[in-house]
Image (cartoon, rainbow, N blue to C red; front, side, top):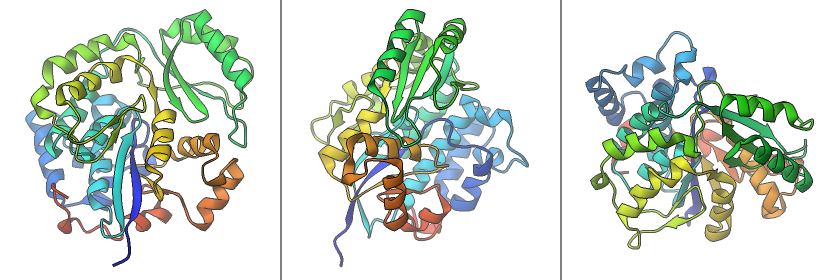
Length: 349
């Protein structure tokens, strides 16, 4: 038997289930026993079943709300994780972006399948509890995915001047958050960027102290005893690694519903640590969607990983032998998941 390739799995966050992804669960995971269990949990809470949301005749703004988007994305990603070809791949670490942290907890075995879904489902609701404010995405990278340090410094100074907070570091992008008036004034003062700032519809000021109501709701309703030690190393939004046998479940619970909600999420550092500490043969980005692929590519360029020093070099490598496999990309899904037969999958895979 050939030696398995070592992969780091990346779990996506909000903004990855959009109109093209409608029907993702039906196409790839219809009949999976866990999907029926997830639907039952939703229905017990008086919420619409995931299969019904996924089977809607058209994609609507309702699909973007936290209490719908979070459980949909989690279910798609987690069931993709269970379907990965374990004969070909060895998962050496798991990480995620923002809401993808909750999926990463389940993939790494720090919480079980049902608890992982309950956390994602509850945090979809809790994410709508926050002080006034929202998020805006700034594209700092140029067309070749390089970032000018002087531009970063200028943006940082304007953030401080207008009371805008860092939310997520995302490769060559920066997500900022704050009260709506502060964001508007900040956006008006920005220099010309490669793309205009984009306000994220339906998003609160995630990963800032303005999310205290969300953190308080999580701590009150999501118990510590759901948490255990990860079975696979888990890289968090600071780049810290939670390893089996040395992880304190109480500390992991505290991070998840404290720092992870209230402080910036550094996805750039998480991917950098994944590369440098685990030196994987490939990165595997779970579905749905593939919107996170560009950000991951930008982190590769920032690190000049495998001599990938520009967008064109990244594209060339992806065309020859993809280092980044996007499970949500039809042309790459078959590399990581040879077939979508759910009968062979189980909650304990």
